[in-house]
Image (cartoon, rainbow, N blue to C red; front, side, top):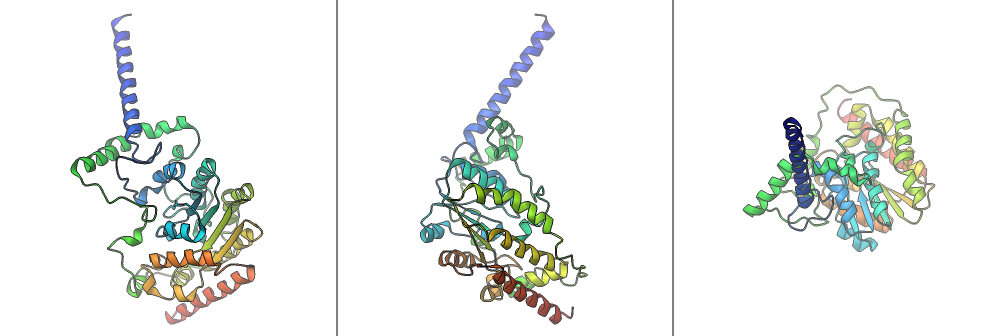
Amino acid sequence: MDQPKKWMRGVLIAFALLLACCAFTVYLADPYQVYRLASWFTPLYSNGEQAYYNPGLARHSDYDAVFLGTSMVENTLVSQVDERFGTRCVKLPFQGGMAGNHAKVLQIAFDTRPLTHVFYGMDMYSFVRDPKFSSFEMPLYLYDNNPFNRVAYLLNGDVLLRHIPGLLHRQLTGEEPEPVTADTIYAWGLEENIRYGEKDVLGSYDFTQPAQEMLAYDAFADHANANFDRYVRPFLEEHPDTEFIFFFPPYSALEWPIMHHRGHLDAVLHTMEQLAELLLPYPNARLHDFTANLDWIEDFGLYKDYSHYSPAVNAWIVDALANGDFLVHDLFDIYDSIDMLEEIAENFSIRQGG
């Protein structure tokens, strides 16, 4: 073999060994718990990286129930869920999550075990966008069942050069964070700097902006149907022995005037009716509607902005789900809520001189 070929062969072998070492390092450290739950370090569980942490949690945690949703469910205490429902529940939310995001992690859960319950905080805004839309990048190579696709994780420069050195630094300096429990994972409401109250709620939206023209009531209808058909209906039909408990979250009373100001109110309320109509026929599903619970939504001391509520409300939601409160029996229950929410939006507009 001539000298250039020998040199090239040596370079290729060295490069292959380097890649193998990188992959093996990521596999052993496994900061996102893709292959196993962490045993020698404390995961950070950053809310901005839920798309990376949730697949490993879904594959390796010990559970028989899941709690899905957006930031509205992140403060849920799954220990309370377990106490009230007799489950072993894991929390798998996505901040700003769309229906497609929730379906990805729910598919992993069903692929790895049978589920007794699925709890699903059903934000209307998660269903009004195109089914292909995601508000954040999804590392799909972590969600499918093809182990060869994990090479994108094993050779990920950010994981190798930022996350692994970071966790090693925390280990060596003793700066490990407090261990995260099934209750505290992603729970932003436990942070000391979070404030609640009327001042913060009213200051979270600027009504001096020009009001937008109201969208047609069915502006989101096609997307809502498509999201339900693609990301909800298959689970309901393929898992008849699983109890699916859906709920519409209790945004503050300010959310509905804001929707009116943005021109979304009619379309969002129609989406709410639409989702209820799609869910009601399924015997293994039930729907709770907290949107017009005035005792909660008009108490701005429970909210940090116009939509996000305190952990106390998450606890009340779990109790209500267990007690069967605010259960939607038929569409007339939804119509009653819609009437109340429209009245809230209209009265606020009148007070604002709109």
